[in-house]
Every structure is written in C-alpha cells, then in structure tokens.
Image (cartoon, rainbow, N blue to C red):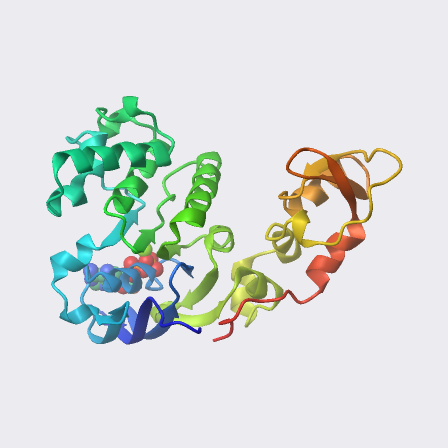
Length: 329
Ligand SMILES: Nc1ncnc2c1ncn2[C@@H]1O[C@H](COP(=O)(O)OP(=O)(O)O)[C@@H](O)[C@H]1O
Ligand SMILES: [Mg+2]
C-alpha cells in the first residue's frame, strides 16, 4: 500500500475472562483509506470482537490499533466512538425516538445546532431513499429493510471517515438484502468511507468487499485478498469449502461486459441485448435463457455497440485477473 493505512491493527488479542482460548489471537491487518474490508468467517470465530476493538467497544487485551496514524487506545473512548460510524444487524434504533431523532443522535451529542442537524437528517433521508414523510415515524412503523437503512443513515450522520458495519443487512429477506447491498455500494462510490464490514455470508463478502479477510477460530486470517483472487485461488481446502460451489459463476458476477473485449456490431440483430454495466453472470444467464451464445452490448444511450460471445466469458474466468496491489497475506 503506497499511502499510510487508515486503520492499522498490530498483534491485537482479546481474551475474555473464563474462556479457554483467546477470541482474537494476534490479529494484524492494514486497511487502506476508502476501502471496504470484509471480515468473513463462521459464527464465533471472532469477527465482532475484532471489529469492536477498533472503536474500543471492546478493550483489547494486548496489541496496538491506529486510525489515521493515531493510537486509538490513548484516545478518549466517547470521542473515538462518535468519530466512527457504527451499524449493526440488530439496528439498535431507539424505539421511542422518531426516525429523525435517531438519525440526528450523534450530531446532537457533538453539539451541532438545530438547523444543521435538520438539514443533515433531510440530506441523509434523501440519500437512503426514504422521503421526508418518514421523518416523524417511529422505528416500529417501518419495515425491516427501512429500519436498516435508517441504521446506516445514523451511522453516516456525522460523516465519519471510518465505518464499522456488523452484519448490517443481516435481518432482512434476500430480496431486500440484495437491494440494500447494491444501494450501499452505490453510496460508497461517492462517500469513499473506510469500512470494516463483518458478515458470515461468503456471497455477501464477495459482493461488498474490496478485500476479504477469511477468518478461522481466534480471528486467525486464513486468506486476505480480493474477492476475485480468493475465488480463483483459495488458499486452502477450508477456504475453498467456505467459498462454496460455483466459484467460476461467482467470478462472472464480479466482472462487467465493459471489461471484456467486444466483437463488432453484428449484421444480424442479436437475440438479446444488455447494457455494458451488466455483469458477465447476467450475460451468461441471458444467453442460457435465449438459447444463444452471443449477446449484444448497448452503450448508455441504448445504442448497439458490439457483441460478446460466450468464449469471451470463459476467457474472463480462465485468465488470472489483473489484481490491484496489496493482495496476498
Ligand atoms: N462478552 C463475552 N464474554 C465471553 N466470551 C465471549 C464474549 N463475547 C464473545 N465471546 C466469545 O468469543 C468468541 C468470538 O465471538 P464473536 O467475536 O462474537 O464471534 P463472531 O462475531 O465471529 O460470531 C466466541 O467463542 C464467543 O463465544
Ligand atoms: Mg458477530
């Protein structure tokens, strides 16, 4: 990594009293500014403990943690927590507070004036796609997915550079979850937060992560790499099993038509067309559905610009991908 990491954990351990082995044993990891780093692993492996030590909701037993070059263990705890966005599966909205008051919680603690808080709440409601009519509702008057959106808005309220997200979309049905994931990724394109994202769901990890740390018991890192590289070259049997079947199909889901070579516009109209931002997985799915090995590619204005054949999809997963720096353990 060329720049100083935004978050740096060095040999961080946590032993809970009365537990035979540490929940986190010598965890070392650098997280770059603007990166989504996913911690993924089976239940009980230490993901939540690792993440909560970053904002000191849990005090490490040993080791050092820096955020932006500052020793976290020497900072005032409350100040530290207000400076880090925190979103969790249980959402944790205060049931007796309106949506607006929940979102404005941290800015109020920071002493922002009323006008500034109101404006921030409005901007965030807009950002998460909930209209102003949601302002004065209570959490129980919202669906699970809407509550999770409000939870994310609350975490974003004071515009913290660092966010910790612990299974933030966990409590929703698959369709809502899928939508929340893509909405959040779209937000992140402009927000560029540094995010530690915890999940036990490998598919969520490959969707959300710029890099993924696959963890074993004691938060030991089995593999640290891009989703693409982990799917293509799992470090061991356990990672391969955890990644699950269909790794080639999953890799197709990480690439877009815009990233492969197109053939020229065909003389005959293709049986189906897709936008250049469609994933290769969608392209293959469409090919299967239309019983065709070729698909037309449209530009943003909807003009046919070329054609992609099934061979290009196969080449895309056969070639080792060009990986960003900072890959292997
Ligand atoms: N407050 C606690 N006291 C004692 N043991 C705990 C506590 N919190 C977590 N643990 C134990 O530490 C290990 C890691 O837990 P956790 O970090 O919650 O894992 P994960 O988030 O990966 O499911 C587990 O064995 C869990 O039982
Ligand atoms: Mg957990």
